[in-house]
Image (cartoon, rainbow, N blue to C red):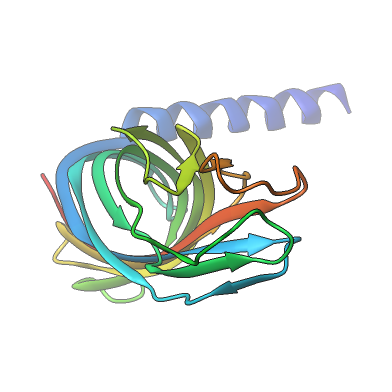
Length: 208
C-alpha cells in the first residue's frame, strides 16, 4: 500500500514539474472601450442614469499551464471612465436646486483573472475568465459627488484567441465596494447610502 502511495506521489510531482517546465509566460499590449454607470442604493432619489463611455489601454502578462487549458493573467491599465451624467435630487437632503453631475475619472487599473481556454479549434480558441479588478483614482472630484480613491470590482467575461496571439474579450464588472466619499457640503444625506460603479469592457490584446 505504501508503495502505491509513493508511486502516486512520484507521478504527481513529475507531472507538476513537467507542467512548470512547459508553462508559458507571454507579454503583450491591450486596449479597449468601457461603458459604465453609477448606482445609488438606500436612498430616495431622482437620477437620470445615462451610461458613460470611456477607454482603457496598457500592458498585460499571461501565465499558461499547458495541456489543461488553464491560464492566469494580469494587466496594468490606464483607464478613463465617464460615469453616469444626470440630474440628482435626493429626498430629505438640503437641496435648493437639482444638480447636474459629470464625474469623469482617470484610474490606474489592475485586473487579475483566472482564464480557461478551450482548444477545440487550432486557429480560434474561445475562453472564459473571471477575477477581481483594483482601481486607483487620479485627480480630484466632481463639484457635487465625491468618490473614494480606491475602487474594486469583480469581472466575468468571455473571449476569443485568434492565431495564438490576438485576444478579443468582453466582460462585465460588478462594483464590490461603496465608492461614495460624500456629496457636496450643501447636501446632507445618510451614511447608509451606497454608491457602486458597474461597467462593461471590450478589449483587444496582442501577446508576443
